[in-house]
Amino acid sequence: MLRPAALVFFAWGPVFATQEAADEIVARSIQAYRENQTLARNYIFEWRQTQWTRQNPPKVIFDRTWLCVPLEGSLYRVRIRENGEPLPPGRQKQEMLRLRREAKKRRRESAAELARRIEATPRQAPSQATGRKGKPCVS
Image (cartoon, rainbow, N blue to C red):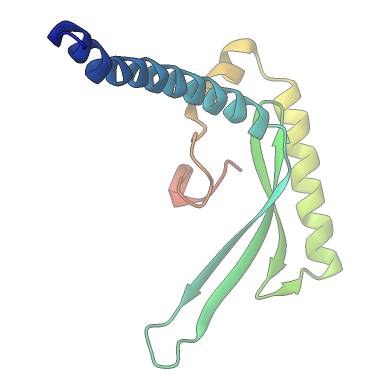
């Protein structure tokens, strides 16, 4: 027959083991999140912004798509579509020139300027974060 002390151990033992396991899971989750944040800065992705009217049926006011590109430590966005259509060749050329100019500017930054720009970069997904003037990503 089990004694009362043994019953307490058997009854509460899994609770303490579960708490320790939960702490380990949270610690691993935090570490994985930090690693993913670092890796995410190295990926190119599309970001789309659409605004609708409140009429019935709703109508699209505008629909814009950007290509978010990692550039010298933070994201830079290049517009690639307007209202679902690719940009005209002249506008595409302008966007590529803007990208080259910004890349050149960022390569010439001092270490302090680079640190300031990276610190000011939103850490959330672009759909949740707004940069200067309410714009997504950093441009």
